[in-house]
Image (cartoon, rainbow, N blue to C red; front, side, top):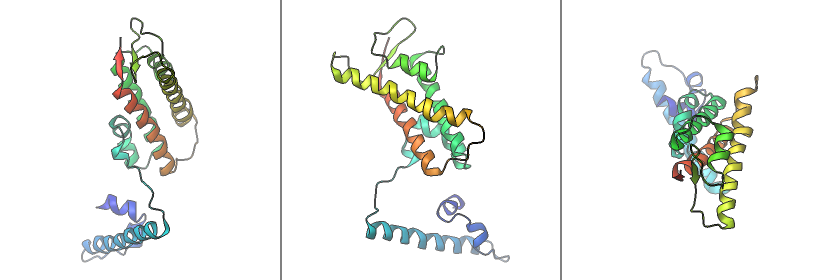
Length: 191
């Protein structure tokens, strides 16, 4: 319940009075306030046309969310995204049985349109029918993975003094690693 209240009413612990004789009264009052906030937000979305789809981290690919969950729940969003990136990298290495390459080099290799080589299997998102679509899909996956690691994971991991990511920006970054994880997990290994 406290986690829900923290999300709906940040600062409720200090804004809702503590009743010394019965601490449950604070929870009850906080829950009532949270209910009002949730109902009001739903009415605003409904009446002002902001009833847009929402994304849930729990619905993301498990490699991304499981890697990030503990850090996310403690408010360390930048570190959570980095942890998700590490988990996706590790699971990709497991999927293709490689430890000699990681991150950008790994994804360049596994999504390469070239035939597999000994010790360098490929991930196929679709059958190689010689089409432009096959080439495009794999080139896109390779570029997307490189963007995830070069543009998201590297700055998050290597730049000192960066401010904490706002939660919505971190969620967008986490979603990128979820997409990559889904592609890797759903691909066929070609050895």
